[in-house]
Structure formats: structure tokens, C-alpha cells
Length: 289
Length: 289
Image (spheres, helix red, strand yellow):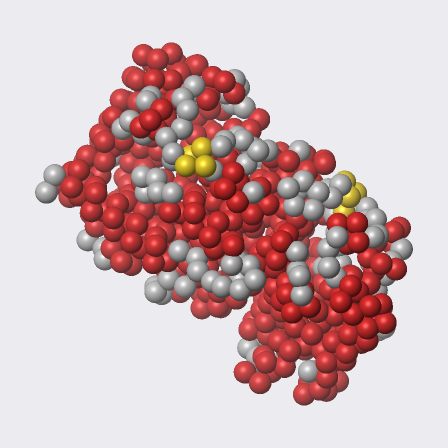
């Protein structure tokens, strides 16, 4: 099977589980389920669950064991996008080619839809078919990655503005990197990785996370609006510092290649078994959305 | 010791644990810890942790075992107040006699401070010194109580407006009742309650939760602004339906007495051991803030 075929199958598998585990309910408050599911169904690349699946498979783990945790991470990612798009944050009207949650449901409902998805991620972890020991291990990893010293901390730096290269790197490591890393960690923990395997997998994910963000910055300068589903040039418009500001276009491309190479090198110890994750790094390096 | 002395001591005990377990950190994103702790330290009655403590004590459980979970519930309560006060929700400038979080830190930071506290509640549960089995049980209870079919669902009904008495009761059972009930449940689970004890304790908490909300509605009509720390008449101003709209002042007072009596009757099986929780119900019935 080609990498592209495998990526499509893994994306479909992730989507099926996300649909299966998405929040459901009825009552006077039924709108909240529509609002939460609107953003879940808006799609996206599902990179985080795909990494969790691929790491778990590489280590010979059973994929269905990691899915509740992989979906929880995707729910957290989705909540962060809903809150990030709100008028008091980035004030974005479009995401993934459709109106953002608050444009569709109003600000109050979008705020609560985000809250719902963050909360529900932990409900999903709680109800996973796994031993209490595994659930608690995963809960520690995910709650730390998504918290004030993880993803939210990165958002804080983002709204203040990153004023130095170090601050920019710290911001991205937290804002995007932590959830990508924890996806890999959770895949590894569920598959029972040893400590050497775990540290190599974390190195892969950390480098991949930065490469991913660098590609985002490049796409905001030279991407195609139609492929992206959102306007380009938003970073320049908002006066936000990016890799391109600090390194220039050519320096940014070099950094992208270097982080991607480092990510791939981290997987040497896994030999052929790492094939999908190696191809994934190359794919993310050249993606147009 | 009088009830009042005991209440003061339990409040101080809860405050000491809340301070001990409050979110801490440093880095480029340090403001988020200030913003989160600003609302945690703003005080409040600490009713939820106090109920968890008192239920645990009544059943002979060790109080310190329940505290991480009791604090997690208080963090969730605090996040819900920060988000409820935002301009797109209730747009309140004052709470507990001081400026609300977004007035002090701006909307974006207040949004993220709320997100931080919700996330951190689950981090606190994950890191509790308890068996994985207890942690997973408590995680299921709390994540369900604070989610879309619990507290958040109640907020959804609230922003739409409750258009019937049934809808009003459903709203309060979810918006306030669920977190109060889960405080009692967590106290009971940690102390190892049997199923009969648990169901009586839940009946107490559910009735108490409604009585608590009815008293809130009455205070908004006939309370003292200085004691409350916020303006009265806000329900009428916002056109929001309350118990007073559906039952009248005298009918609302009757309902308050009835729910309080039902709460107290639920504790009959515990005899003298229930003394504090019985007094707490009477205290909440007559509170002026």
C-alpha cells in the first residue's frame, strides 16, 4: 500500500472513532451537542490521533486501545480552535472553509461548546476500556500537555506576542508541540514502550511539532487560500512574529528541513517499522493545507 | 463547638488546601497563573468542598483523602464563574465585591484563565494521592457533573432562558445542583459509603442544591447589595425567569423551606452524625450572601 492510501485509511479510522465517541445527549440543552459536533465534524487533518495510532502500531500495540485517548486529544484540539477563533482572541470568521463556531452559533454557545469539549475529553478518558493504572497515566500526560504549562501557556504567549526567537520557539513548543508530543506518548504508553523507545518517540514528536508550525508560518506567507480554507497573510496583518520574521523565507525553509530531518533521525532505532511515521514527516513538510 | 465555629474552621481548612493545590508555574506565560489565582483567591463560601469534607467526616472517612477532589470541584466552580461573567455571557463587572476576571485581566486572558482552571481540575484529580480505582471513579463522577449534561447544560438553558417552571428546575438541577451533588458523592465514595448511605446523601445534596438556588433568587429580589458584593435586581433587569416569577415571593419562600426540610429528612439514617450537614442546610436557608 502507498503512504497516501495508508494515510487515507488511518484518517477514516480516526474519523469513525471520533464520530463514535463524540458527545451525545438530549434535553432542554440539546443545542450544545450540535455546536460541539459542528466543529468536531469540520474535519481537519487528524494529525494527533494519526500519530497516536501510528506509534501504537509501530510498537505492536492494539490500535483500538489507544483510540479513546486519541479522540480525547482531538476533542481538546477542537476546543482550543473554537476558543482561539472567538472575537476576544483571534476573531476569525472562517476555519477549514466553513464559518467558525461563534459565527454559526453565537459567542456564548461557542464558548460553552469549547468548554464542553475540554470537559468531555476527560470524560472520554475516564470511560476508556483500559485498566485504572493506564487511565491515570494517560490522564496525567494529557492534562499536563493541555494545561497552563502546555497548550494554554502557548496561547498566552501568542496573545501577548512573541518578542524574541526564543519566545517564539517556546510558544510553539507549548501551543502546538505539547498536544502532538502527548499523542505520540499516549500511543507509546498504551503499547507498553520501554524508556529508550519512549525518549526516541518523544524526540520525533517534538521535532515534528516544530516543523509542523514552521510549515504553518510558511503557508501563511506563500500558501494557497483555496487549499488552506482560510485567508493567507493573517500573521502579517495581525503584526504577529513568525519564523519568517526572525529567519527570513530561506532561513525558515532551512529550519523546516532541519527539524524534519531530526524528527526522522530519532526513529532510526525502529528500522523498517517506522516507515509510516517517516513518510508522515515528509508529508507534513510539503503539505499545502 | 458551635456550628458557626465549625463552619469557620472547615472554610479555613478548605482555603488552606485550595491555596496549597492552586496552579503554580513560571515562564513567558506567567500571567496566566496570576489570572487563575485571582479568581480562586476571591473567596466565596467554599460550599462544595465543605460538603465533601462534612460527608466524608460523617461516614468516618479521612478528610485529607477527599481534599484534592474537593479542590478540583472548587476549581471547576471558579472557572464556570469566570466564563459566566464574560461579556458574551452575563457581562458582569463585579463578583464577590471585586472586579471580575475579564475586567482585571482582559477578555482573552480571562477566557484562558477559565480554560486553565477546568483543565487543572482534572490535573489535580490525576495527581491525587489515591488508588487508581478511586481516581477513575471520581474522574467519572466529576467529569459527568461538570459536562454538557451537567453544569454546562444548565448554563446553556440559562443563556436561552428558562420558559417554564420545569425548565427552570431542570436548569438549576444542572447548573448548580450537579456540582453540589457531586461534592457529596465524592465525599461518600472516598469514605467508602454503602449504596443506601450514598442514595440518602445524594437526596440531601439534590434538595440542598435547589434550596441554595432558590435562596439566590430571593436574594436577588430582597438581598442587601453590600452583603452580596454585587448589585441586586439583575434577574429582573435581564428579563430572566426565576422561582419568584413562577411562584411569587411567598410561594418561593415555601419552596425554599420545603426543599430544605427534604434535604434534612434525607439524613435521618445517620442520626447525630449528620449534625453539621443539618445545620448547614439551615444556615444556607437563611444566608444573606
